[in-house]
Image (cartoon, rainbow, N blue to C red; front, side, top):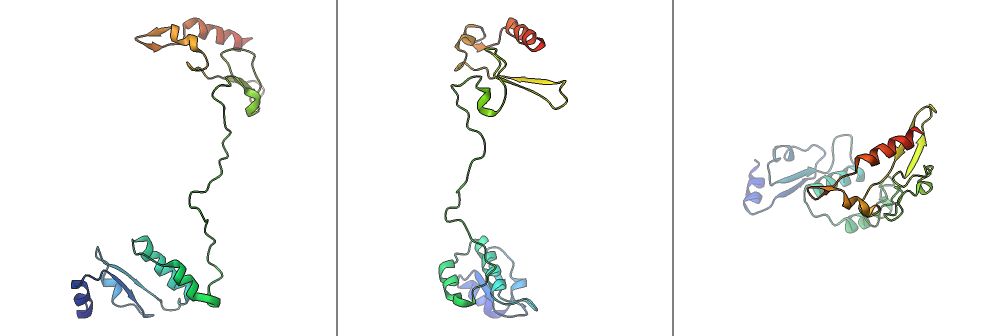
Length: 170
């Protein structure tokens, strides 16, 4: 360590920003909990490099007053800065919302209804030889399922499987 850095570290300083186009001190100070960065690099200086180095410190826990920094740039502010969202968790959901009470509402998701109380929808695949049936079995939509249980676990009766196979075959 440089004697000045050693002295500052013993006084509790843990973040160092070297203002030189040829950083010589900061590469040797990469020990935890010391945070270091330069401000310039040979053939790569300016505001973009400075802001990149401050962002690097920010990701390592250094508190950066971005409003003050960006305000001080004034008209020299780089035009390549990204526009950040005002709310970090602002999202738009693209998944269809399915109502739990509407068992078998195939039209709401663009499928055809098979006309069977246990099947919710079907679709014929592109090869026109394969048809896929789907349905949702739940105690909420089919409360009679609770009448057929083994060890208090509702089980679909074997005759229901037979009925589904016959309907799909037809």
